[in-house]
Length: 239
Image 1 (tube, helix red, strand yellow):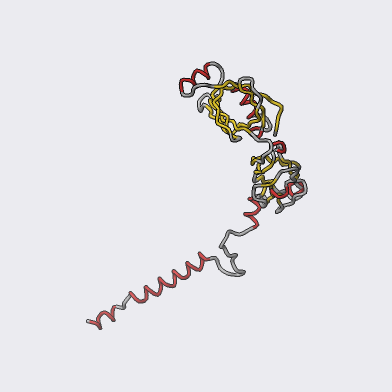
Image 2 (cartoon, one colour):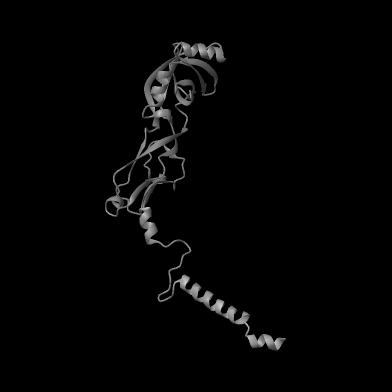
């Protein structure tokens, strides 16, 4: 989304770790701007201005103006940054020049609004599966976000990426059948209503397996005892 923001930058004549340290001590960070069939340029920018853009409602989809050494401003986007893992401060940023006449691909957030009927009337649960989709469009047509109404959803129904209303030059890149949100039943209720997979219900009037097993063991023990015990007279006959 294009914003009326201009960030001033200074051209860096040299590169390297020592130059980067000097740039940070001066209150700025090293950055690189590239793209639009032009050579990459090393610059120094104010990290607070870059972070303010990245953390705004449009985030990385923000197109703003970059003015290097007072020259004509160029539309750019933040495409990458390096953060200090301990301090959380911005150390470096990559900026990309944007040709406003060329289509580009971006990821846009999807906001879900409304309380589904399946939640209010059927005690279901709203499950949000995907919170963003990828689109392709002209730079000036990048939306801040998409809004999807889920009020009419009942249990078992869903809203998919193909249900998102698109306008202007916007074309959906994500799979159209990707589920954004659906209403499901409580898992506890599903488990109680459905027997475990592969388990069969016992037939009416049948004895529990443990009882049957006990009877079989008793019968087998009795038979074995009859075979092994010999009468005293039998022993004498054999001699």
